[in-house]
Image (tube, rainbow, N blue to C red):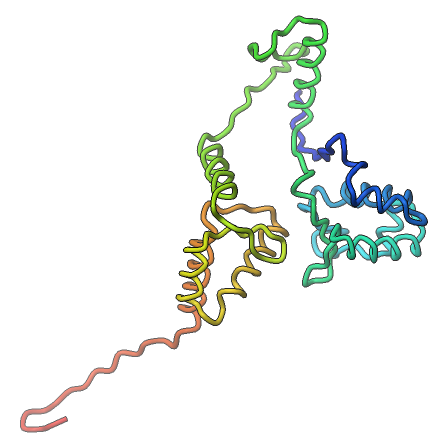
Length: 250
């Protein structure tokens, strides 16, 4: 049987350790320990979209982080202070630690797809598969069929629309700099919701950062949320019926 379990991985650029942040971090006292701890925390947070969760309900604490990373509690506590100062880690409203750069590093695949990728690399090294050639299914035992990769084209259209939007005239807003609005959209939200527009930007920013969800139009999402909340807060309309007899006045 094929193995289609999902797993996650980090995508590190070759200059990751040469970045200004990592050079300064590793130059500190215990900096190499901090660097090792940072990578382990990234890995621990992958399945939760960057949030360090012990389970579905309990966030990690410095003590549990120390246990799972095999570092001293004191080292973890000092490192967390440094990570917070550098903007590598943020604390969410429920007290959970969030790895701020995780969306730039996260990847997702399946064991079946990874095996297929490795086989393609092997064939390329042996010059058995030309660059850009047709995909080749890796060897499989009888009854184990390499499934075709199926992706909804609507997802490609959505992702392309979001990428184009983020690269055009929209600016980044929110605590996690992941809410994109044009100047016109921001002005429209400020005019429509003068007292709460900022709250909804922060709400959307935190929601996307904690869940990994993406929206095609952030302005439309904020407008929809605000409209739904306004309807919930509005008092119910009661219909009153009056009957008037002949020769009576109201």
